[in-house]
Amino acid sequence: MVQTTSHTAALLKRQQQVLLPAQNRMLYYGDQPLAVAKAKDQYLWDVEGNRYLDFFGGILTVSIGHCNDEVVEATVKQLQTVGHTSTLYLNEVTIKVAEKIAAITPGRLQYSFFTNSGTEADELAVLAARIYTGNTDIIALRHAYSGRSLSMMSMTAHAPWRLGNVFDGAIKHVRSPYYYRAPVAMSEADFLELCVRDLEELITTCTNGRIAAFMAEPIQGVGGFVVAPQDYFKRILPLVKQAGGLLIIDEVQTGWGRTGRYWCGIEHWGVEPDIITFAKGIANGMPVGCTVMTPEVAEAVKGLTLSTFGGNPVAMASAYATISYIEKRRLWENAEVQGARLRERLLAMQASHQFIGDVRGLGLMQGLELVVPGGKTPDATRAMALLAAARRRGLLIGRGGLYGNVIRIAPHLNVSSADIEAGCELLMLALADVAG
Ligand SMILES: Cc1ncc(COP(=O)(O)O)c(C=O)c1O
Image (cartoon, rainbow, N blue to C red; front, side, top):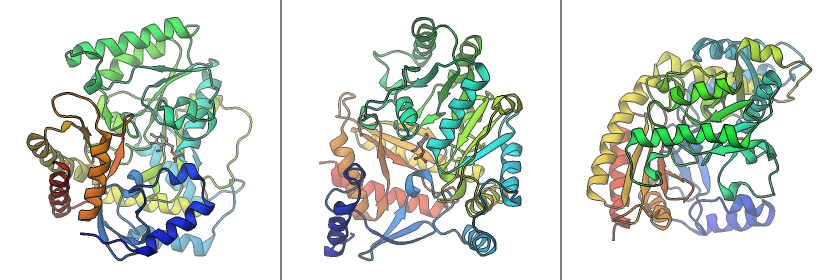
């Protein structure tokens, strides 16, 4: 069992004096937050000396383990060679990352622009779609999370993340393909029809019939690892195209082999997006956002653009090392194999705990939706308790979902069978702790 002392409390007090209260409200574990001392590979240590097995990776960002030796070496080497130039000059490492992205992304995606966050990557995607199509309206999904700029907060469909009277009236939200929360009991096929009809109706009633884009995460991350029905994207794509829109896929959480079998999550649904956005796991924790688009969309973005820090050589060296590490070891395969192992263990846990209403996800992106037994009422209180119990047992997991009742589990892509087993043992103990 982990121990906490006054060291953490002192740090919390200092943070509360100088960091935005809205940020402090996001701290896990209430008045005993986790204060990080160091991390290596699958482990993270707090300032009290407790070691944790990390199954959340800084929100699916530390994709190949903390302080991964190959990434650290490439990053330090670049920092000692040239640290910053801006996008006014050529940097080979940036070109190499863009070449890799053009080679591995599905379809005809070719031109990348690098920024520093998922928010910025999504901003450019929307901008490019509006310029290319000449249309304004963007359709997003309820339960989506797209970032924290004003327009990405407008895309986001969770009330607590939309404070400040977000103002983009050209963004319309359609039903999320969240089958577990279908409005009434129905088959998955009927639910799919409901989602498709909702999109049709939204386009015909809330737009002028022409849209710039439909933007979605293949698996809604912050939304609670919501996986769309298998035919979902194939069914909505013709409607989007008929209305003149582009398909923008946000792979900020699902990219880089996370969902198993493929580089990109959307490949499970067999459609080719016009624009994909990446961030989080692309550089194992260094700040990188990327928007990659087809040649015709890229050509349409006339005028000038620049990002002072975007595509900077140090972040690009981290990205190149991360992508190469994943590629050399074919980690999308490990994500599929270890994800199946994890899934099997989670389903066994569900069988012995009625408060686990749903187990869902793909690859190493698995969620547990906690409910009041006997129905589907979300149980955020137990989810909070489970998070804390797991931490006391030495396991870090995440929480999400509109109702705060979904446990998010996302080990690093190079996780071993032994670590999956160890993590599941700790999770089982934590579940027993909160079962009473
Ligand atoms: C799917 C998705 N898109 C965009 C973002 C925004 O990324 P960032 O926090 O890097 O701006 C996030 C962040 O969690 C995300 O999950």
